[in-house]
Image (cartoon, rainbow, N blue to C red):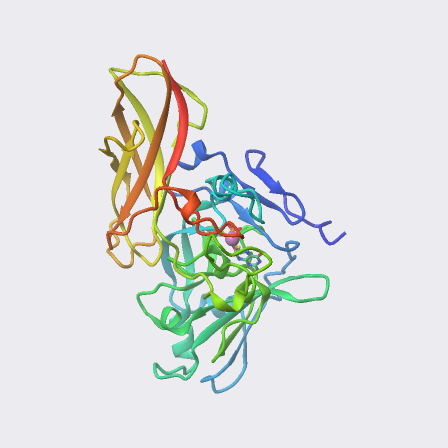
Length: 374
Ligand code: MTE
Ligand code: MO
């Protein structure tokens, strides 16, 4: 059984698939802390978790613009200046279960907790590449990452990012060996993973085994034939994956974590309490959260309760928010809606039906829940 050597997992995680293991925490736990504890951070594995020995671990680096191929041990990597960033990582399929209600899509049935926020510590990829002699005018256009996890035909998980992001000293791309000040756990990529702040989870390659500088994107399935967006009019008979670019920066998103869908909520002093998260890709900061209890007739501005001081466009962390919304009824059913605005004044689309896509990715419509108040 290729899945015979999987790590232990926290009992609060809710699996959407066991082999490979994929799971998210209950949303109400997500908003309890600005930094998501490692054991509660959602897990997205496409393949069995590889067993990697830190003592013998080697990262191979090769490709355009490097004088020679290289192998670095974990000790070698730790000799470089240590850099820490706070960044959210979100799966492209976060909130797929809402999109699939419009019309079925293919993919894991994620709720809205396939996102987490952590501090990541490691070597800056640009420091390493510069040290290895890569020049700013390199002809390489992409940095390809390969994982040590492989499928039955021995093909590894892989992805790539544009050289502009990799070489930007303020882009904060890390080869991370710590999460929240601890070594990475096996599920989150022990001993080394790529952290590409502001970019879709899929490019944050775990169990990093190889880096290749190239004129081309990664030729992996997950770069070429998955993790792309399409029109609602494209179905599995007509889709041509070559016609859409690979997802990199993610759009602005927000979600309500408490109350939960269907919950009975007590009205206190004519108001109800609502809490959630918001985040935008590309380093765009969240500047406002709008909440409505009357299906958009009136909007209330939520308070941003936890947000770090990083500036646009280098604001990698998520923001937590809370709102006390006045309600006009004494009891009964109502909907709570949220949308966020980022520092480029991008906001979310109102309905999933206009952004539906066959793979169920990029699900950032208003988050709408039904609750009953008393
Ligand atoms: N890296 C490897 N090697 N294998 C994987 O299956 N999954 C990717 C990415 N990196 C994956 C990977 C996807 S799709 C996501 S969303 C993130 O890892 C999830 O990271 P996490 O499990 O630490 O939350
Ligand atoms: Mo993902």
